[in-house]
Image 1 (cartoon, rainbow, N blue to C red):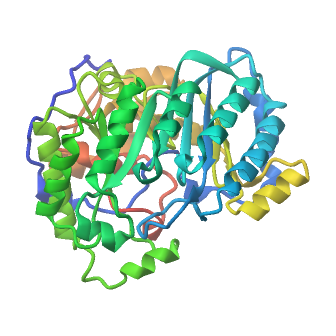
Image 2: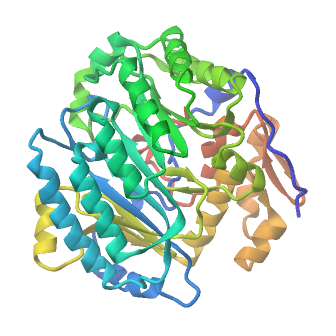
Image 3: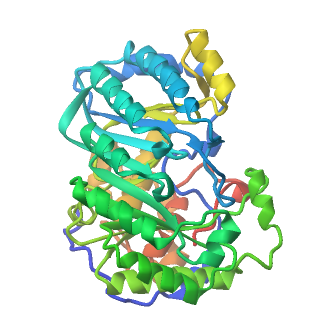
Amino acid sequence: MLEPREIQRQVGTPLDLDLIRKYSISGPRYTSYPPATKFTAELAPLRLEDSIADDNRPGAGPLSLYFHLPFCESRCWFCGCHTIITRRMDSAGEYLDDLAREVRLTAAKMDLDRPVTQIHFGGGTPTFFPPAELRRLGALIRSQFRVAPDCEFGVEIDPRNLTAEHVLALHEIGANRASLGVQDTNPTVQQAVHRVQPQALNEQAFAWLRGNAFQSINVDLIYGLPYQTPDSFAATIREVLSLNPDRLSVFGYAHVPWIKPAQKIFDDREQLPDAEARLAMFAVAHEILTAAGYIDIGLDHFARPGDELAVALGEGTLHRNFQGYSTRGGASLYAFGISSISNTADTYRQNLKTLPSWRAALDAGMLPTERGLRLTDEDQRRRTIIMRLMCDRRLDFGVLSQRLGIDFADRYKSEIASLADLEEDGVVARGPRGIEVTKAGVPLLRVVAMRFDATLSGVARQHSKAI
């Protein structure tokens, strides 16, 4: 067994940019394994509805609930989410009526004695929903499920349409964590991406949330947007730090106009930063945030040392799901609303992505499933390996052998051998008892994980770059 170790803080540490350049390839973000690109629409052989009953096994763990609330009043040109653009406020109530049907249809197949330890509202813009509808959604959840007293309840927030009444309603239904979409504070960039959001709105949102006892506030930023430069992005980060967020997510913009046609507006490549500028933005973000005391959790997540994410990283209890890094593991995820993805121990199940098709399935009394996957035993083993790499930055051969019921070093000797180039370049350290990702290798976690991914073959266009 590997010795316990303390996660070292990278205080203002410059990144090894040459190393990142060498290995900056396209690959999955590993919010799931196998990745969602491997889901199939051939549903009959998968028996996905049976998986809900199978999930109600004796000793089953807790539940995690996700609600996709897809409406936005306007489109941000960079957005890759499944959204519906409308200013028709009645859409929220109508959608919630249908969401209630899906919840009840699913809950009838579930063991509702299992505690709910995590709830997340995503979108779209959950705060598109009026406060009364948010309260109605909260009441629906508590009428169907047993919400644990210490449930982690997060909600994505757009400061542009947030009111004090929204925050009060969210607090009343149990929300205690918030993630604010900021992306960039530079007016030129905001105009280019169709998201004008003065810093005063961000400050007001923080004041309301802190005043209603929200335990943790995250800020989302994006680098690689039109007209961004390393200097302008550094200014954005410093301006956001004045808000004193608990966490930050610093994502690289994924330009996929063949999937998201709205992004074609950026096809004038002079607007978009080149690869070197993107890398410089990531580097300056890392340097400023670590100098300010934030822990590099991995990929694009940063957290204050006392935050649950940082604590979980140090204690080896970090997990990863479709919302990114999480402190709540062992839970079956049940997701509701268009495009949302559920997963049990051996299945993934994704909902239909359009409102008419999702609603039609509910009208027929059916779960609104469009695609899915049933994992083989080997898929489940590789999922464990990849998620431990992504969360622990190490693989302990003894622990994994015991957990997976195999001789890990023998079973995966070819994958371990494939790390030779990464070891030579200082990305990983290998030994007879395990593998560790080095401090320099942390930005390349995805690259290390890809060596254990049996699904990769000619899919670079389907995934974003590692940086």
